[in-house]
Length: 347
Ligand code: SAM
Image (tube, rainbow, N blue to C red):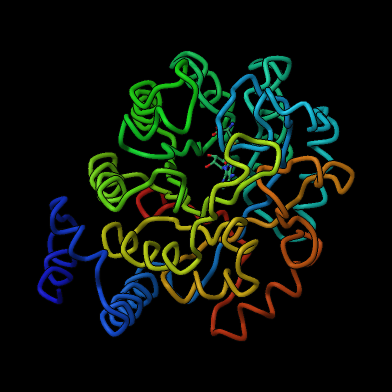
């Protein structure tokens, strides 16, 4: 086992068979891996944690992903769409609190037009030239991604969800394909965005083989950010009776991803914080270096319910930043007011 970890540290890649062996590490080996991941993160980014203000701009979605609470077939979801003014008000509040990255995430909502999104991005960049803007609004054509980039967007998050096409087809309706998802990610990278992909851990039908394929895909794409969180079932989806993913497995994978991609921006995700109250601390102590508190207007937070019991208030709320800072200090880390770019993007 330890020779595989040494190989990973030296070459930053493993074969599928090697990943499968690493996944079977025992507790003592996992602890060594965790410590190494922390050392690497500390060497690259110091003992700092970057924050992102997450603005959930719309929960309308034309897609019907089987796992997702805002899928179009969920007639129980109460739908909302923020106006440009509401989003700008979130940024104003976020800037005061110390956020220097705003993440606009939403379902694939045709009525939130690409041009309105461009206008919103431009206005945020005009008002806050020292801030980064991240978009996460799903699959678009290359032309549209280029327009987002010209408008000033810096980063784009689009999880690949699973790198195995048979598995992808078990999580999504036929009109969504892994091939298209990957094409989008390569376009985004080519255009010049800091790009994030990622997968749910413990999603229905996932096997260790599929997870090993996810690791191979990360080796191939070399993303700047990787968002991973446990799958959590939602009561009004076809996966309502499926078992949740595990926080422990998610945390172990965070360490492995840090070893594979030393410079990566790695969030302690909301889903992890939902399953485990101490999830954020555990993630940072396993190599994560980003947290994304919720900056959406309070009136809509309950409506962006991707999975059951999703946290959006308490320490997940941007308003509770002081408390989150304290919690990070307790484990020896400092939340900083900075854009928090990927190492290769720091001018
Ligand atoms: N529409 C955009 C997209 O598809 O990238 C952004 C919104 S989408 C709801 C954001 C992410 O939520 C997805 O990439 C997925 O991994 C995650 N998600 C959705 N349902 C989930 C669930 N039941 N458990 C955990 N994560 C979930």
